[in-house]
Length: 198
Image (cartoon, rainbow, N blue to C red; front, side, top):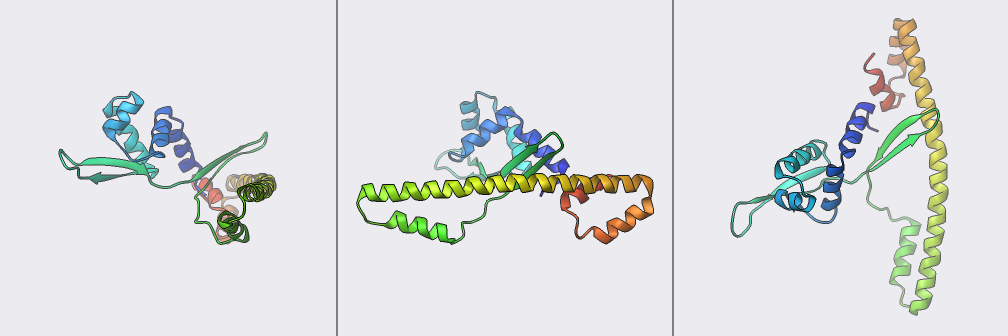
Protein backbone atom coordinates (compact mmCIF):
# COMPACT_ATOMS: atom_id res chain seq x y z
CA UNK A 1 0.00 0.00 0.00
CA UNK A 2 1.39 3.42 -0.91
CA UNK A 3 1.45 6.30 1.58
CA UNK A 4 -1.04 9.16 1.06
CA UNK A 5 1.80 11.46 -0.03
CA UNK A 6 3.09 9.01 -2.68
CA UNK A 7 -0.43 8.15 -3.83
CA UNK A 8 -1.25 11.86 -4.08
CA UNK A 9 1.83 12.37 -6.24
CA UNK A 10 0.81 9.49 -8.48
CA UNK A 11 -2.72 10.90 -8.85
CA UNK A 12 -1.21 14.31 -9.73
CA UNK A 13 0.99 12.69 -12.37
CA UNK A 14 -1.91 10.74 -13.89
CA UNK A 15 -4.15 13.83 -13.68
CA UNK A 16 -2.30 15.39 -16.62
CA UNK A 17 -4.01 14.65 -19.94
CA UNK A 18 -0.80 14.66 -22.01
CA UNK A 19 0.83 12.13 -19.68
CA UNK A 20 -2.25 9.90 -19.87
CA UNK A 21 -2.13 10.11 -23.69
CA UNK A 22 1.57 9.16 -23.60
CA UNK A 23 0.78 6.12 -21.44
CA UNK A 24 -2.05 5.08 -23.80
CA UNK A 25 0.33 5.26 -26.77
CA UNK A 26 2.99 3.26 -24.91
CA UNK A 27 0.51 0.43 -24.29
CA UNK A 28 0.53 -0.12 -28.06
CA UNK A 29 4.30 -0.25 -28.67
CA UNK A 30 7.60 1.41 -27.69
CA UNK A 31 7.96 5.02 -28.94
CA UNK A 32 10.83 7.47 -29.18
CA UNK A 33 10.48 11.19 -28.41
CA UNK A 34 9.94 12.59 -31.90
CA UNK A 35 7.26 9.96 -32.62
CA UNK A 36 5.41 10.85 -29.42
CA UNK A 37 5.74 14.55 -30.21
CA UNK A 38 4.24 14.00 -33.68
CA UNK A 39 1.40 11.75 -32.43
CA UNK A 40 0.46 14.16 -29.64
CA UNK A 41 0.99 17.43 -31.48
CA UNK A 42 3.18 18.60 -28.59
CA UNK A 43 6.72 20.00 -28.75
CA UNK A 44 9.62 17.61 -28.09
CA UNK A 45 10.82 19.65 -25.10
CA UNK A 46 7.41 19.31 -23.40
CA UNK A 47 7.25 15.58 -24.26
CA UNK A 48 10.72 15.06 -22.72
CA UNK A 49 9.56 16.75 -19.49
CA UNK A 50 6.46 14.51 -19.32
CA UNK A 51 8.63 11.44 -19.97
CA UNK A 52 11.04 12.53 -17.21
CA UNK A 53 8.14 12.78 -14.73
CA UNK A 54 6.67 9.39 -15.77
CA UNK A 55 10.09 7.75 -15.61
CA UNK A 56 10.77 9.31 -12.20
CA UNK A 57 7.51 7.81 -10.92
CA UNK A 58 8.61 4.37 -12.13
CA UNK A 59 5.75 4.08 -14.64
CA UNK A 60 7.88 3.95 -17.79
CA UNK A 61 11.46 3.14 -18.71
CA UNK A 62 13.69 4.09 -21.59
CA UNK A 63 16.15 1.94 -23.47
CA UNK A 64 18.63 3.06 -26.11
CA UNK A 65 18.65 1.15 -29.39
CA UNK A 66 21.17 1.50 -32.17
CA UNK A 67 19.73 1.92 -35.65
CA UNK A 68 21.50 1.11 -38.95
CA UNK A 69 21.88 4.78 -39.93
CA UNK A 70 21.90 7.77 -37.65
CA UNK A 71 22.20 8.30 -33.92
CA UNK A 72 20.92 5.73 -31.41
CA UNK A 73 17.32 6.31 -30.28
CA UNK A 74 15.86 6.10 -26.81
CA UNK A 75 12.61 4.11 -26.85
CA UNK A 76 10.14 4.35 -23.99
CA UNK A 77 7.92 1.51 -22.75
CA UNK A 78 5.59 0.85 -19.83
CA UNK A 79 7.73 -0.37 -16.93
CA UNK A 80 5.11 -1.97 -14.70
CA UNK A 81 1.41 -2.56 -14.72
CA UNK A 82 -0.83 -1.68 -11.81
CA UNK A 83 -4.44 -1.08 -10.93
CA UNK A 84 -5.33 2.07 -9.01
CA UNK A 85 -8.61 2.25 -7.11
CA UNK A 86 -10.11 5.33 -5.49
CA UNK A 87 -12.80 4.88 -2.86
CA UNK A 88 -14.94 7.88 -1.95
CA UNK A 89 -17.92 7.64 0.40
CA UNK A 90 -19.65 10.25 2.58
CA UNK A 91 -17.30 9.15 5.39
CA UNK A 92 -14.11 7.99 3.73
CA UNK A 93 -11.60 8.76 1.04
CA UNK A 94 -8.91 6.25 0.20
CA UNK A 95 -6.76 4.92 -2.60
CA UNK A 96 -5.25 1.50 -3.18
CA UNK A 97 -2.75 0.28 -5.74
CA UNK A 98 -2.40 -3.34 -6.85
CA UNK A 99 0.30 -4.81 -9.05
CA UNK A 100 -0.70 -7.76 -11.22
CA UNK A 101 0.74 -11.20 -10.53
CA UNK A 102 1.35 -14.12 -12.83
CA UNK A 103 -1.77 -16.26 -13.20
CA UNK A 104 -1.76 -19.26 -10.89
CA UNK A 105 -2.72 -22.71 -12.10
CA UNK A 106 -6.15 -22.53 -10.48
CA UNK A 107 -8.97 -24.94 -11.25
CA UNK A 108 -10.64 -22.21 -13.37
CA UNK A 109 -7.44 -21.53 -15.29
CA UNK A 110 -7.00 -25.23 -16.06
CA UNK A 111 -10.68 -25.51 -17.03
CA UNK A 112 -10.33 -22.55 -19.42
CA UNK A 113 -7.25 -24.12 -21.03
CA UNK A 114 -9.09 -27.42 -21.44
CA UNK A 115 -12.07 -25.71 -23.09
CA UNK A 116 -9.82 -23.69 -25.39
CA UNK A 117 -7.94 -26.83 -26.48
CA UNK A 118 -11.07 -28.92 -27.01
CA UNK A 119 -11.61 -30.15 -30.58
CA UNK A 120 -15.41 -30.53 -30.61
CA UNK A 121 -17.72 -28.86 -33.14
CA UNK A 122 -17.34 -25.05 -33.24
CA UNK A 123 -20.94 -24.38 -32.14
CA UNK A 124 -20.62 -26.67 -29.13
CA UNK A 125 -17.20 -25.25 -28.21
CA UNK A 126 -18.54 -21.69 -28.49
CA UNK A 127 -21.53 -22.50 -26.25
CA UNK A 128 -19.30 -24.11 -23.60
CA UNK A 129 -16.85 -21.20 -23.66
CA UNK A 130 -19.60 -18.58 -23.36
CA UNK A 131 -21.30 -20.45 -20.50
CA UNK A 132 -17.95 -20.77 -18.73
CA UNK A 133 -17.27 -17.07 -19.31
CA UNK A 134 -20.68 -16.19 -17.84
CA UNK A 135 -19.97 -18.27 -14.73
CA UNK A 136 -16.57 -16.61 -14.30
CA UNK A 137 -18.11 -13.14 -14.69
CA UNK A 138 -20.78 -13.95 -12.08
CA UNK A 139 -18.05 -15.03 -9.64
CA UNK A 140 -16.00 -11.91 -10.38
CA UNK A 141 -19.03 -9.68 -9.76
CA UNK A 142 -19.70 -11.41 -6.43
CA UNK A 143 -16.06 -11.08 -5.39
CA UNK A 144 -16.05 -7.39 -6.36
CA UNK A 145 -19.14 -6.76 -4.22
CA UNK A 146 -17.54 -8.58 -1.28
CA UNK A 147 -14.23 -6.73 -1.80
CA UNK A 148 -16.00 -3.34 -1.89
CA UNK A 149 -17.79 -4.10 1.38
CA UNK A 150 -14.54 -5.26 3.03
CA UNK A 151 -12.62 -2.22 1.67
CA UNK A 152 -15.15 0.12 3.28
CA UNK A 153 -14.84 -1.71 6.62
CA UNK A 154 -11.03 -1.66 6.37
CA UNK A 155 -10.89 2.05 5.50
CA UNK A 156 -13.35 2.89 8.26
CA UNK A 157 -11.23 0.97 10.80
CA UNK A 158 -7.94 2.46 9.56
CA UNK A 159 -9.39 5.97 9.72
CA UNK A 160 -10.64 5.41 13.27
CA UNK A 161 -7.24 4.04 14.40
CA UNK A 162 -5.43 6.99 12.83
CA UNK A 163 -7.83 9.53 14.40
CA UNK A 164 -7.52 7.82 17.80
CA UNK A 165 -3.71 7.92 17.60
CA UNK A 166 -3.77 11.59 16.55
CA UNK A 167 -6.00 12.40 19.53
CA UNK A 168 -3.60 10.52 21.83
CA UNK A 169 -0.67 12.46 20.38
CA UNK A 170 -2.40 15.75 21.23
CA UNK A 171 -3.65 14.75 24.67
CA UNK A 172 -0.95 12.45 26.06
CA UNK A 173 2.28 12.25 24.05
CA UNK A 174 4.05 9.66 26.29
CA UNK A 175 1.01 7.35 26.01
CA UNK A 176 0.95 7.93 22.23
CA UNK A 177 4.64 6.94 22.01
CA UNK A 178 4.02 3.84 24.15
CA UNK A 179 1.06 2.73 22.02
CA UNK A 180 3.02 3.35 18.84
CA UNK A 181 5.93 1.19 20.08
CA UNK A 182 3.59 -1.56 21.23
CA UNK A 183 1.38 -1.73 18.13
CA UNK A 184 3.60 -0.46 15.30
CA UNK A 185 4.21 -3.98 13.97
CA UNK A 186 0.44 -4.57 13.72
CA UNK A 187 -0.55 -1.21 12.27
CA UNK A 188 -1.19 -0.85 8.54
CA UNK A 189 1.69 0.85 6.72
CA UNK A 190 -0.67 3.58 5.50
CA UNK A 191 -1.58 4.54 9.09
CA UNK A 192 2.09 4.56 10.15
CA UNK A 193 3.05 6.69 7.13
CA UNK A 194 0.24 9.14 7.88
CA UNK A 195 1.31 9.36 11.54
CA UNK A 196 4.90 10.19 10.51
CA UNK A 197 4.10 13.90 10.36
CA UNK A 198 3.25 14.01 14.11
